[in-house]
Image (cartoon, rainbow, N blue to C red; front, top):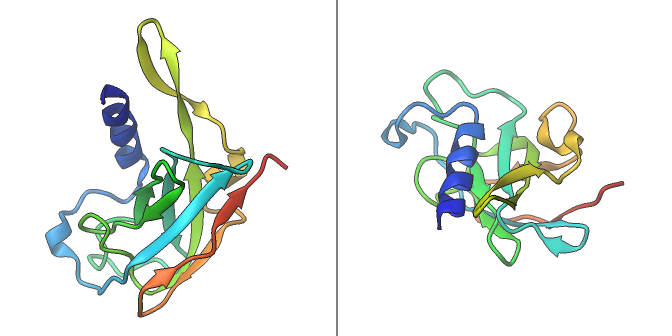
Length: 145
């Protein structure tokens, strides 16, 4: 459990734009579910962030929609409260996966195993569109190539 807590803390810090409370959400969000694999395996523990292509108006959205990938590779986006979804729009999708490594007797987040291009909104090839309905995205299949 300490590894999950450490990874969760890292993931929340990585979700740039955090800071305002969820109660301040002023735009509607819609459920978004997806799946991430890396080299054919579920990217369990990877951190996914949706970066809007059109920046929200100040005060509209407290943070970029984000999720932690589950053991089976699936995720459900969170904007304000757990699994609530994301606002309508087009997004650049970033993925970082710090697989745990042993450091002494502890497991700690290791280096990002996903190619660097996937970690930056300006270089990621992953894109998504959120519609005013439930959104089941095509899987994001990441490879080293």
